[in-house]
Image 1: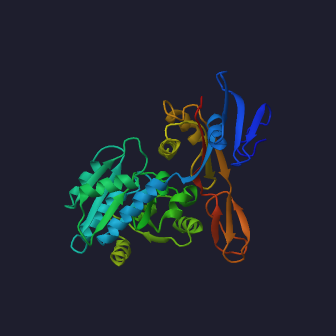
Image 2: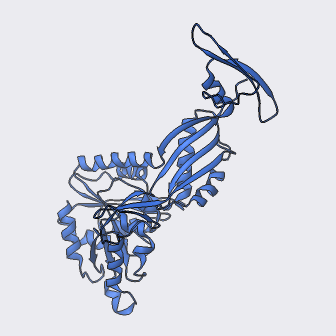
Image 3: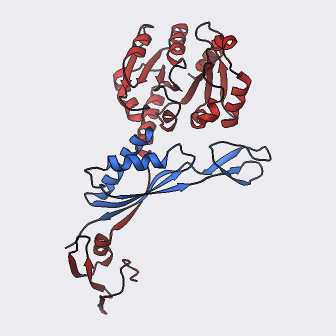
Length: 266
Length: 112
C-alpha cells in the first residue's frame, strides 16, 4: 500500500525523479458510477485524496459557536456590572411567580430586568411587565431552550442599565437548557414540591449545572407527598456544592435568604 | 429534543469545513454522560442533511464511556450517570464522557 495516499499498489506505476526526489504516481481508478479514470500526478496526497476521500481532522466542539457567543455575553455583562442569572425548571414550577414576587419585593433596592423565554405567547412577559420592570420576550417556536445568540439579540432590545440584574427565564424544560451556556453568572434551578422529590437524580445534568436550587411552593407541603430531606439528599448527591433554598412565593416563606443571596451577588 | 438543534450545528460546521465538496463521512464523538442521544442525532442527521453537501453521507458516532477519578484516593471509576461518589467517600472529577465533538470528516472531490 502506498503510504502517501493509501492507494493499492496494484496496477500502479511509480515514477521517481532522482534529481528532484519527486515521486510521481500513475494509476487507474474506477469511480462509483463506473467511469474509469487514469491519471498521473506528483502531488499524490492531494489528488488521491480527492478520489478516495480526504479525511479532515476537525476536533471541533459542536457547541463551540454557542460557547463563544456566551463568552461575549459574559464580557458584556461584566463590563456593565450586570448580574445575569439563568432560571431553569420544568413547566409550571413557579418561575414567573417567584420572579414577579422578587421584583416587587426588591424594586427599591435592585434594578431588575427580564428576558423571558417561552415556546409561544407573551403571557409571562405580560405578567412581568405589570411589575413595572423592563422585559423582552423571546419565543423559541419549536426550540426547547434559549441559546447564547438569542440572549445576545435579546440584550440589544432590553438594554439593561449599568449595575443591575438581568433575570433570564429559560424555557420550561429540565433537560435541554442545562447544555447551553448563555453567558450568565449562575444557573439557578427551580423545583416545586408538587413535582417528585427524585427530580435531581432523574435530571442530573440540570442539577449538576446549577449553583443553586430553589424549592418552591413549600406552603403546599401539608397537602402533597413530597419528602424534602430526600430531595435535598438527591440534589447533593448530584451536586455536592449546590445551595438550596426553600421558599413560597405566595406566602413569602424563605424568600429573605434568596434575596440575601441575590444582594450578595450584585 | 435539543438533538435537532445540535444536528443543525453539526451540518453547518461540516459544510463550512468541506468548502463546497461533497461529504462522504462524518465522525462524531459523543460522551455517554453528555445528555445527547446518538439515536436521535442519527435520526435528525438524515433530515438535516437533505439537499446539502452532506446528503447521503455516512454518520459514524463513537460513544465515549464515562470515566471519573476520585479526588481522595485517585482511583479511576467508570460511570453510567454524570454523578457519583467513590467507595472511599471521595468526590469524583469527570475525565471522559461529556464529549460532543466532530472528530473528523471525509470529503470527496472527483478529479477528472
